[in-house]
Image (tube, rainbow, N blue to C red; front, side, top):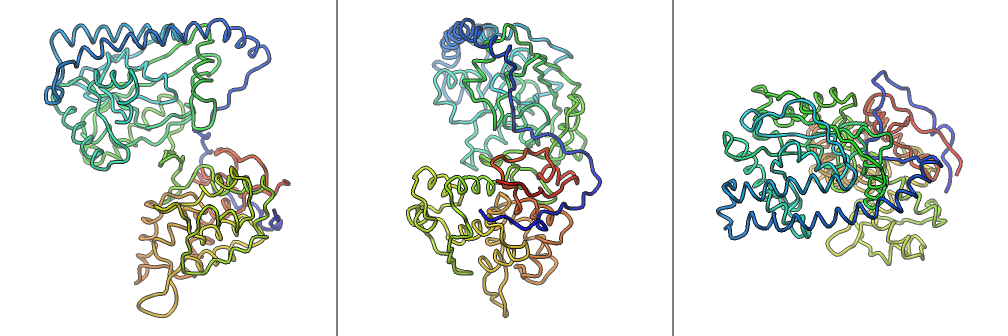
Length: 520
């Protein structure tokens, strides 16, 4: 791959700001030689027995879960279960659940603070959410109701436990389902103690416990008081974290089961009563509770979150990928020995040309099927599995490194700008603008569309001229730094983490510098 000139890698002037928080989506487990020997021995002796017994207890939970809802209609399940079903099944599931975690090595659950009653706080919010072991917090909370994906109903035993719990189910692919969940949460939270408390993990996904992710507003929509619940794993070695990038499910389970003893701290903070403004604005409410919990934990509160399957962070008015996918595409192509500057893209400005995966492989002269599939998946596909060749041309130009940022942004404009219907010249409308930002910065389309509308408010049209687009991408104090960082990636096989200089996290905190040139 051709290298950019040294001038392209000149550091940006850093602006004052707080230090960048660590990347909450990455967990690295470093073991000494003695620890490796210890885990090999205990993993061979202790872990198999623990995991086997835990699975036996998990399946013993099924009869109690099934008995509580057996014979009840959907209409009856819309009200909280009472009577003998509640007494027998609830106590049975609670006792077996404690035994399950005990067998996995969680010998102690230390509880601090006072759990509020359902009248005092109808909603519990737990954080940080760092592992699939976090449901252990259900035990000191007396098995509150939870919110879960509807797809989990089809999982053996887990589905039965969700029915037992009368969980609020949401389908991530159905907007109507989300509206029903909002209504159900509000109905239960405002039932004046009729329903048990509802437990949320407002981060919505797992992190490494080094920073709090942005809280989603679902737990705060009802505008009722909430009780924050902190989860800590104060063990000498962190084997429980299950982050986006790090040990997988089986490794986390095996290493944790190999520990002689794992300890969990659950701390109930004072009930948070929302102000009138917070009750009307769930996002404000969520942000304020996040800051309170982060302060109690002694870690940063960040704007990081997951959008689809990609971790993003807020920079100004824009959401951008925490780790640029464009850099990952460059790694795939370099591994295949491809120099993007040698590819004749031949994309026609302002006009889409859809290509299949086979034509994509021919154009880029790629023969390995795995490499082709990996590179092709970077681009957004239509219903027929085709991609716009303009997307490919822009990505290759960005990875080439031979163009200046001014030339690259001009090319992006020329590829996606359209003829102005009410006058001469061409303008970049919202679809083209969001496509460029998605390709180059990993920005979700809705966030880019919102920013485009704000940029267009200064002019009479609904599109951006070349001058306006380059003022935004090259000269804006914040977004210019973002483009400089993302479009001049380091030529290495490793992607820097979000706490490094030149990362989007450091840019969001005003401490960023463009990455300097490195050798392949």
